[in-house]
Length: 201
Ligand SMILES: [Zn+2]
Image (tube, rainbow, N blue to C red; front, top):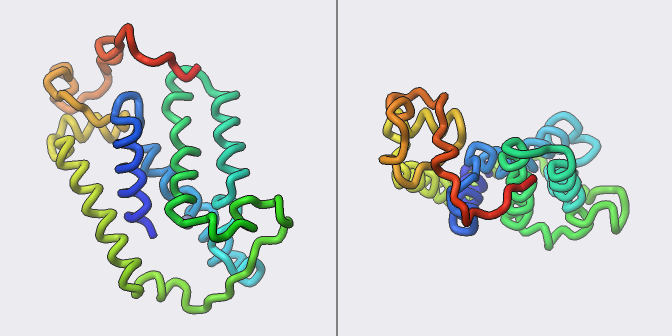
């Protein structure tokens, strides 16, 4: 499930953290990283071994290690950009209801082997189950709603999003060059506030 995860994760991050300092390109990526890691491994290339599309990327351990790794190795703007990635991985795991699969979620606490779930019709089932299709439609609706709410149909705002991942609350604060679609000069200093939270570094 692609758009379900992307749409729901964007909505959750938006309501929890807003738009300030959040790179929503990283949110979109983090929303599907667990499946990007596990589905090719467990359902395509090593299907005969794993028989499962929920493996390492669906474990608390990998998400936690990534979170710690980002906090300990990155600094400043780079850390602020990427800290949301493992958080979105955790949101993905919650949306997948991983508490129902504790052997995988808490791996390797209950053993190093992942449970097997042979399913020859896995990919066809993904495309035909009504509730899965409904989830994808709901995800698309959420993404379209957010993109319309933040006016990404505007070339300047869209360019800003594509280059920086930013959703702009008040487009009138953008510089003229940003409005023309040239995002090189970011008004970051202008957006700083003396009462803003301490930076991630
Ligand atoms: Zn998943």
